[in-house]
Image (tube, rainbow, N blue to C red):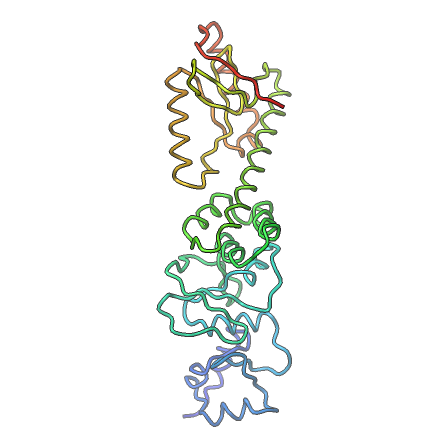
Length: 316
């Protein structure tokens, strides 16, 4: 069988000069021809077991990642620190390339490649030329589970969110769907990012109300019905019975959080409290609509009998 040079060129062009042993044989190279190319002073070099770079010199990062992907097999996806640069997220520097492979994959780690067998092979990936990278949320999760410093984990999580490479909701989903082992720092860092996002959104609400000319509500005051605690909303008009809240649904990290929120909403409804909920993005991008809804609720509530509720001011 003769070498099909055209097919060989197509493979190398498609895979940035990296080829597998099986592909080399498929285009007509014999074992002897392959060995000749891989000799000590030859034009090719071994990149990984059964994966070759058809150039001399030091392999580039792209060559290394292409080799790792080919070594992982069909459908494998690069994740972890190696995937973060394509999303422009800052992460730890490492010589390893982490690759997601189906749980049935029989290959073992080799050289600089770490294979991660998983039952959660991504349905989607981020393509960059011939390379397949995990989406940002999965790449972040796979990165931080291997880190031992809360400060470093916090840096990766916060950077991904601040650069809008993934949403908090996507990271929460990755946290909950992924392995619990070594996820403690991920959970802690994500909780901090969530809290910071909520604080920023509440500050946006306060500033918006301050500029609106509307009466100012009480912030973070407790509402009681006798000895029953009702709620501690973001903003509260006691004389009007109106609560304004930054919508917390996108911050829920566990099912029990959602359950507690439903119970809280039920308590406020039982005591006839009018609840206006706004997403953080609405407060930032649709301020006129937010103020319009609050103004309308205030107008409707004027002259309404006072609710039999007690307000406890926030301390500090």
